[in-house]
Amino acid sequence: MEQLSITDFKRLLDHALTQIKVRENEFSQLDAVIGDGDHGTAIVTAFSAAVKSAEKGTEFKAMLNDMGFAIMLETSGSTSTLLGAFFLGMSDGASGTELDASGVKAMFASGLANVQKQTQAKPGDKTMMDALVPAVEAMQADQSQNIKELMQAGADAAKKGAEATVAMKANFGRARNYGERSIGYADSGATSWSCMFAAFADAL
Ligand SMILES: [Mg+2]
Image 1 (cartoon, helix red, strand yellow):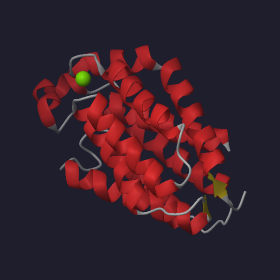
Image 2: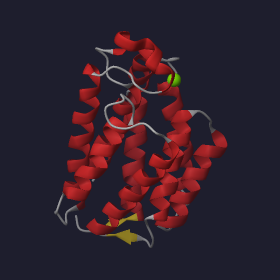
Image 3: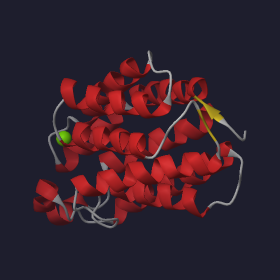
Image 4: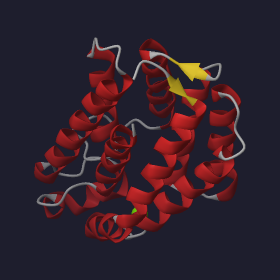
């Protein structure tokens, strides 16, 4: 697959929402270990707002911008701030109705850059950045012109990153207060973002 159309992208979003819904309870249970246990609901609500907004999209830049704003307007909390920032950032890095491999890479790099403006969290802090940062970096490093291969490289890195959070101690936000008790469970956000990247790859 050398071109990603708007239709392909909508299919990828729909599949990600389906997969996130399947695992909603798991994300909330992981969040309950070191937080308020609402992450499953939060990510499903935020992603649903984005997907609903995307239905009427006809080109990447406006569609991604609308998705980001739909999340920010319809939901609140850190999950929606970060997911909204991701799509708004992707909007900055995308244009037209079809993207090639370098266009897809630029779109995801721009999404990450905007998330990095919203959070000080770094890989190793046991947050969603443990999935997002390696995923986008793996995509940038992949030389394939095949977009499915690129997305698979991102999905594999996100999965590895999320799995690595099991051994980590929470080092960011309120979760930091749980200290040693946070060890032994994957981070909810890293797990849900990894689920999203896996679905993106599977949908293509
Ligand atoms: Mg929470």
